[in-house]
Structure formats: C-alpha cells, structure tokens
Image (cartoon, rainbow, N blue to C red; front, side):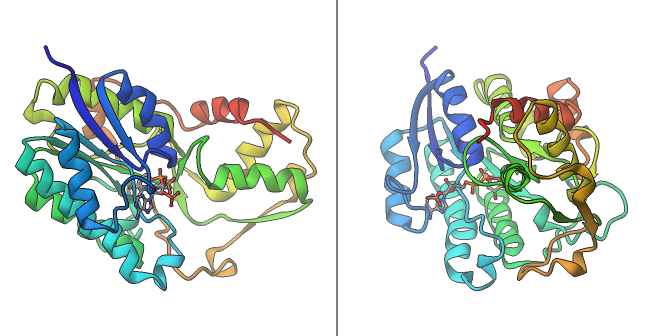
Length: 299
Ligand SMILES: NC(=O)c1ccc[n+]([C@@H]2O[C@H](COP(=O)([O-])OP(=O)(O)OC[C@H]3O[C@@H](n4cnc5c(N)ncnc54)[C@H](OP(=O)(O)O)[C@@H]3O)[C@@H](O)[C@H]2O)c1
C-alpha cells in the first residue's frame, strides 16, 4: 500500500503541534504554518493543497482570538468561514478526506444537558458564527469530511487558560475565576490521538463511518473556577513554587468578568457518538491534566 499523503494546516497551534508527530507516522506529511500558508490568502491555500496531492487534509488552523474577533470580523470570517470552504472544494476535487475542528461556541449554551452533534447551532459571538459558517461550508461541499467538535482546549504549544492560571499562580496571591460556565478541559494530545485513530481506522482505507460531525471531549464536567483549583492543586502536588494558595482563588459570576465576546454558559459536549465509533471510553478530564502539569516546565 502506498503511503498516505497528508497536508496539515496550522502546524504550530495547540492541536496542530500535537498532530504533527502523529500524522508524520501515518504517511508523507506536508505541514504548514501561517508563514508558509496563510489561510487568509485563497490562492496560496489552494496552491499549498494542490502541491501536496493529498489523500487527507487536516485543518488545525483557525482564527481563535475570540474577543478580538468582535472587532476583526472580516479577517476572522476569511480564516474560519471562507478558508474551510476552499479546503472543502479542494478536498472534493482531489478526492481527499478533510478533517476539521469545530467548537462549542457554535452553541449559545442555554441547553441544560450536554450538547449532542444534532443540536441546532446558535452562536453568540463573531467567532462562533464564523466557525459555524465553516462547518456548514464543509458539510455542503466535501462529501468526505470529519468535523471534530471540541472545547476548552489546552496543550503544551500556544496560549491557553491552563498555562495562564499556572503562570499567575506563581506571580499573584489572588485570582478571581468565573464559576458559572461549564465544560471539560480537553487536551490537544487527546484531540490529536482521536484524529489519528480515525485516520488510521476509517479514512485509509475509506469508510463511511467517519463521515460527519463528532464531539470530542474527556468525561466529566467542571467550571473554570474548579478547573483553576485543580491546576493549582496539581502544581502544588508537583512542587511548583506557587505564590497563590487555593483558598485565594475566588469564584465569581460571569457578570463580574465582562468580555467583548459572549461565551456559552454550557459547553459540555455529549461524546456517545465518538465513543461508539472508536469503541472506547475517553479519560476523565483530570487524568491528562495531571500529565500536562508534569510536562510543563515551571519557573
Ligand atoms: N482553543 C480552544 O479552546 C478551542 C475550543 C474549541 C474549538 N477549537 C478549535 O480547534 C482548532 C484548533 O485550535 P487551537 O486551540 O489549536 O488553536 P490555536 O492554538 O490558536 O492554533 C491556531 C493556529 O492557526 C494559525 N492561524 C491563525 N490564522 C491563520 C492564518 N490566517 N493562516 C494560517 N494559520 C493561521 C495560528 O497561527 P498564528 O500563531 O501565527 O496565529 C495557530 O498556529 C481550531 O479550529 C479551533 O477553532 C479550539
């Protein structure tokens, strides 16, 4: 069997960096960052994909500055809505499979239960609207696609809540953290593992079973406040030089932490569909978090 030809966009992001070594082990990988392929440049994007003659396109690039997007609508839209449409067109023309990542921000968070894949999107922010438009374009254009819907992502590469809390815990003696938004902290490694597993088992050779949208999240749920508490507790157990003590993490309602973009209060994703596809359970959110704190070098 000839090696799978894979093109990865967004190789330096949280998910992209976790994907790189895993996808390289699956076949011939061409990996791009913004310097070599700007998703805001349609011609460059088409050329990058065509030059790779891919069997599989993985798009881990996105405009993820959620608050900035409220005032940078056009750029956000180009990267999150228009670029995925181009990728879908190129995937269709090349007969390639397209893997893309969606977000909990396509929902308004008003549902009392975890969101299932079939729930109707109703985004509250420009970022959420742009991601929804990207998902819709892929569904309408690329017959062979997998959209993995993820939330609350953290990883060793890039910026995220977990790294920020750990940094602040070494520098500050009090933190005020929102306690009325719920989700499941999701490691970029878990997302990359699921992506690779799907590629290995259902994309090469091609199987109908991987087509569509799948929620990916660890099991359990928490608030940002309890997530911060878990991070600080873990860092303490691992002998980080903390300035912050757990009792100085103060829970606050969303109203006391206003942001330009409105966030969904419920970001919990139901994962029954992906667990049925993979035939396996997903870890409790605390398990990969422990490993993450251990691998992160502290000051
Ligand atoms: N982070 C989360 O909590 C979260 C939650 C739900 C869904 N998601 C989705 O998961 C996927 C991966 O997210 P992530 O957390 O890995 O994001 P990330 O760490 O912000 O990485 C995104 C990557 O996209 C690149 N990028 C942005 N604009 C670009 C452009 N015009 N051309 C080329 N590359 C560009 C960024 O490069 P630069 O560094 O140069 O900007 C960055 O390397 C995205 O689809 C995101 O929407 C993320």
